[in-house]
Image (cartoon, rainbow, N blue to C red; front, top):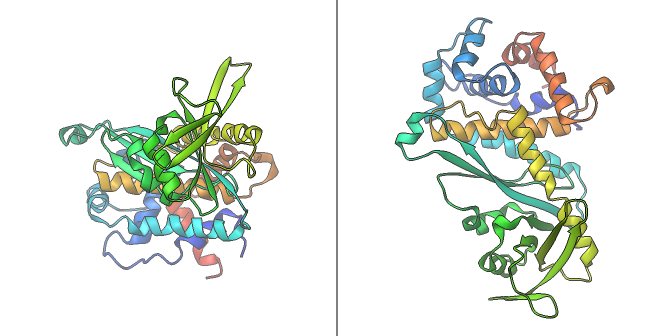
Amino acid sequence: MKLNSFPGIVNFLLKDLPTNDYPVLNSRLFCSIWFTGILDKGINSLRDLFYQLNHTGTQVDLSTFSKANKTRDPQIILGLYHKLLHYIEKAHPEKKLVLCPFDATVIPLMSKLFWLQGHRQVKLITTLNQDTKSTGHLIISPGQKHEINFGEEIMRMLPENGVAAGDRGFCSRKLFDKFIENNTLFIIRIKSNWKWDENYHIATGQGKVRVICFGNVQQKVEYYLATNVPEEIMSNEEIGEAYKQRWAIEVLWKFLKMHLKLDKMMSKNLNGITIQIYVILIVYLILQLLKVPQMYGSKLVGKLRYIQIVIRRELNFINWLNRVIPRLDM
């Protein structure tokens, strides 16, 4: 089975969700409401979302949905996310090495309800597989904890053949040692004031890592990279070219915040925020899989516009879903 149409992907994801597990707000309807909120660019809050739903035929109270966000196990959304990841992984032949940029982004929390709990931001950390263009497992951490403290969790995100690429926020000898202990390859930018020996090596607790230097003439910037990738596997020039691909994850954050509302947390509790983040990443994966008419182009923003046009013909995603899924082969 090859997924490339919007109805096909949605059917693959949602057709098995129960529609009778809760009397008022079943799991399929709960997930569908979240998809409506993310896919409709005109919705910026739960009040906006439910004003639209209640005036287009979906009679669910905002208070019921808010309670579900606080109490429902997010595992049902996580299951959809990992279902898509598993499909994408199976669809791509395994390579010897895959570059996997990893990074953190900060999501501000604007509600005073979070401020009273001492939370002003959420930190999201993930990887981006440069072969499949898919994100990996997520770290969602409220508070100010520095991303460098998540070294072990980051390593668990990486595929066995992954080469981790990180910026200066992950520059730490302790982190290098954790990568070496776990036989994980890495390319991480270090600060220019670090010291290395005459052979361009930095000593760590687990041995030595080599240092590669290269410059960007246009930006007048020098880059210093530490790596444990053996030179017979990747030359200095290949390491430099590989690090340049790390910028892809910065582009990912920009797209998620500009177009999929990663910077607009609609829920007022941490459980609901976790659910929203996973729905956003699911939509991103859907866009990666989706094939659209040529007139919309191949960029993600063009695919998103295509989806918005499709569902607006039915007023919202829920109405579209209720019409389309019964017509597909189950």
